[in-house]
Image (cartoon, rainbow, N blue to C red; front, side, top):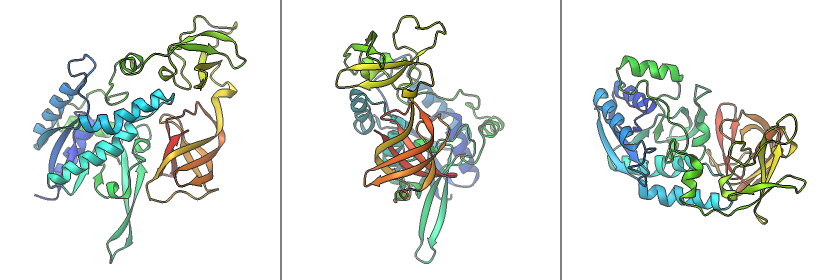
Length: 364
């Protein structure tokens, strides 16, 4: 057999096709199913059992071994604890970013090496490019690139990966369109070829988010006010709302003849006030500048001050041109050419140079 590669099999079609392609290329492939959450094993929203069944069925068709590993304790310590701290502080974290850096490409990578693997692979829509710096010394630089399918590109969630991690990872479906991945799965008769894509935060699944948070965070009610200080309702706790939120604010009726919707525009943590505005394009929802801390850069080096790049301030937002106005050891400030909608503390801002993901930080 060839080089041993451990593939993270989630039960979905993307990781299954990743394993299939590597198997066809002659690698010694082992599947690894990661169990990262176990608080709700008997809950209607928890899909872990079915996902494991789907992963095992796909592994059987591909002809590879499957091992199931429980990383739930690591997840609670490294990801979920931070998730709760951020929400308690009034911010809106993205745990999938931290999960990739701490679990899928750290705990999983360590376990794969223990199994004798030289590299790991996942079904993420991203790509890695190796640039040889010194052939005689065997020195290379690794770049993280966007996935070829712009609608599925997941480089945003992988921006905290470092050179050591990227040197040991493969993204076998990163150069493919999603339709092509499903076609390959269908032709190979993988049982999950038409399985619906998972949505939402990995450990929460399809459950009502506020209901989930309510199990871990106390409610601290306070006033809902307009920017001019008028009280128009009561919130249940600032942790349960996010900037740009429209549904579920709890304001009865709409003000104005045009029936314009209310949006969360700010959180006054000191006064426990939720600030709301009417209209998607209210000035308070639009920001040209942002600062971020806890920055990580794929190459190991931060971009230069005054350099021009593109950036995303949330996953589903289109790239926008920006200038780096300040760089510090653990932070960066950006100024955008166009106002960005609902810039949210706790979310990640990720910088790009064309197709190359440079890294990013946590918006403050």
